[in-house]
Image (cartoon, rainbow, N blue to C red):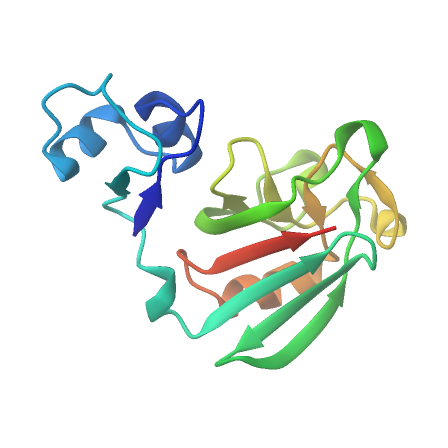
Length: 164
């Protein structure tokens, strides 16, 4: 996968977002000085597939509190979700699923799908009454059976677009 460097990003912050090490990024990109990045620079993320090769895409509508799964450009399934509350809003933008953890424990329910923004993900919940509300710390909550179904369909590298 290719990541395009944005303002204020460092190789360290990119490594955190994609759950990899600076050393792996240095090697994959043959960087002579990891402190010399420029806006618009293309960085190869070695362990994430190219999202363009994956037939799935996820679109999240924060205002509608819906997650829509697309397969080959067609709506495959829609799911109700919970989103971030006003002071801890769900981050708008384009991300990819970088890894997953079954049964992460605590409030994260049956599955955690990490997004390419550190500390954010799509996950289950131990509070199903929260679905449909703006109550999270920015993550996207799903019913446990829904997140398990979604995780069984989409691979790491799947594009996730979060819209207002």
